Structures are given as C-alpha cells and as structure tokens.
Image (cartoon, rainbow, N blue to C red; front, side, top):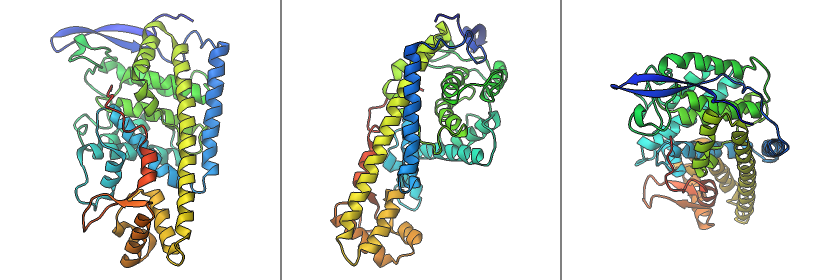
Length: 392
C-alpha cells in the first residue's frame, strides 16, 4: 500500500546554513496496516517463534544462569553497533572489578547498557509504566559515564542532531528540531499506552521502534535505547516472561536493509515492508536464541557428568561449575565468597576444571589469575566476532 510521506519536513537554520528536518506523523499509521496474506503469515510465524523463545524460561533448569550472560551478550552487540570494541569477555572481566588490567572505556559503556536495561526491567516489575520518564531514567544510566556522559544524560536534546554526514546540510537524515521533540515523544507515549487505539504488543514494538529512531530524542544513545524499547514493550505486555528477545545482531548483520526500510517508512509510508523485515528478525533471532540456550544447557549437562567422574572432589567442583555458569569469567576470591568454600578448595576445584578442559586460565599469570568457562564463552561469543558494522 502506498501512503504519503509519514510526516512533514521543516526548514531549520543551524551552524550558518539551512537544512531540512523531518517531523513524523503520530502513530498509528493512517491508513491502517495492509495485512496481506504474506505479511500476516510472517507475523504469525514471528509470534510462534516468540512463544518458543518464551518456553525456554520454563525448560531451562535455572533460566537466570542463561539470562545473566545472554543479556551481556546483547549489551556487547548493541554497543558494537555504535562503535565500541569491547568483547563479552572484556565486559565480564570489567564487572569483576577486582581483576587487574580489566579494559575500561568500551567495557564501561557496555556495562552502562546492562545497568540501563536492569533499571528498566526493575521499574516495570515494580509496576511503573513504560513511559517517557522511564526512558529518560534509563538514558541517564546508559550515559552515566564514558564518552556519552557530557551528552545530557536523562534529558531530551535541546540542540539539533543528525545521522550520517558531518553537519545537517549533508546528513543522511535529520530528525525533528529540538522544539518538536517533546511533543513528538508525548505522542509516542500515548501510542505506547494504547491511545488513540489498542495495538497488539508485537506490532506496537515494531512501530514504536521506527518512531523512536525517527525522533532521535537524545544527543547520544538513541540506537541502544531504541533497541531496548522493543524488549521492554514485549516484557511489559507479558509476551515474554523473561527479557530474551534482542534484535541487535540481526540489525547489525542486515544494517543496510535496516536503513532502507526505515527510510521507506519515512518517505513512502511503506510500513508493510518494515513489518516484514521486523517479523523476519524476530523469527531468526528467536530461533537462534532457543538453539543457543539448548546448546548451553547440553554443554552444562555434559560437563556435570564429566565432573561426577572425579569421585570425592566432585561435590565442590560442581559448586564451582554452577557459579561459572552464572559468571563464565571469574576469579577465586569471588568464588570463595559466593560458595563459602575455602581458598584451597576453590583452587583445587579450578585445577580439576582445567584438567578436564572445562575451564582455562585466561591471563597466564601466577597471581590474580582469571578463569574462563571456555566452551560456554565460545557459544555465547558467536556473532560478536563480526567486523565493525557501526551505523549509529
């Protein structure tokens, strides 16, 4: 279905030149989405895939073990899109705090992403609505330190930004001027709260993501927060009992298509093409996540069986193994505190895990050694080793 441009263009003057900014029309789209049989089928498949992903929370013996590392993988991927070079191991090492030599700048930014997500989820669990206030709170966590700390954390922008190019005059896209941001975001908040009409959660997430990225309400961090908005919407609506859907890897891998579909919405009103792309992203990402969870659980079970063969030491080694499922990069002091085992017992258990090929020492140092759950990390790291595809 062809629609007119989904907003209006306004001429702005900035830095001594004129440019054209885009102010989007409030959601939902008008006329309504044209649910062709093909598009309906793709969205139905996406809903089924989401259901299978949600079932992972019921099938895993302890979903928190999976969720801790999986959220951090998403943090790495989402931050890589914006140019950081921190790996999952870097982040886990950084979070140890006591480990000397932990990388700082990029890992700090990724850690901020985790803090923003956890704050948002905690607020939703307390019954606080997904709102502009919550988005600003999350943004404050996202930019609380690192390179974005001077980009007005927690506040909508009061100056013009742009995407691509060196200035608004040669930019690929120029979002609304700052005086329009509050009203545009106010309209988006109404849509999130089913005003003027109720919208199914998955469709709402797909539409709201585009609108948020089009408004680009902050000076920095819009991409990361816009991707988190999808997860929070589905979690708040109860579509997901655990926050397991993260589309960063798909958007990262298909970045040019992602750009193209966003622009087609703005210039042609082609919401249907975007929704098809979004549905495909949900299907592929959900399927990959289910497979990853199954592989990690199978690995953990295989390793538990190998540990059982140790005989008498197996009990303490299993306790250390369980802790490494939660934190696959760790140090002995942390393991002593979390298990209550003695320094000698913990180090003996780590030696057993290394001998079995389950764990490995990552630094080569004699003191302050850092241990990793090698195969577990390798599975989690899949997708994070792509070359830099920064687009945000």
